[in-house]
Length: 98
Image (cartoon, rainbow, N blue to C red; front, side, top):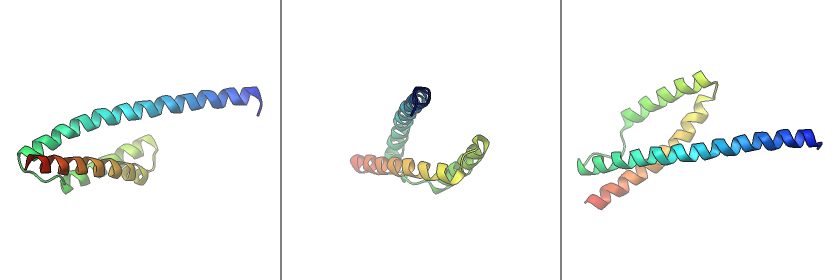
């Protein structure tokens, strides 16, 4: 690989690394908020799963994905993983409260 190509590749990879750091920071902020939601749900004896909320989120995410030119199914799959972790934390918070 020539130096010019290597330099371009390195620059693009640096951008990806910076974006990954932003994703992690956004996830940390998101989980800080969802932990507060979990505490409220635990105090009110509400279930961790809110199926209607999740369906509404999926619809909103599909719209956002389309607006950004992303595969909506991919975005929903990623979000499902995040939600699964949130739900697990909410269930753990409920157990701690009981």
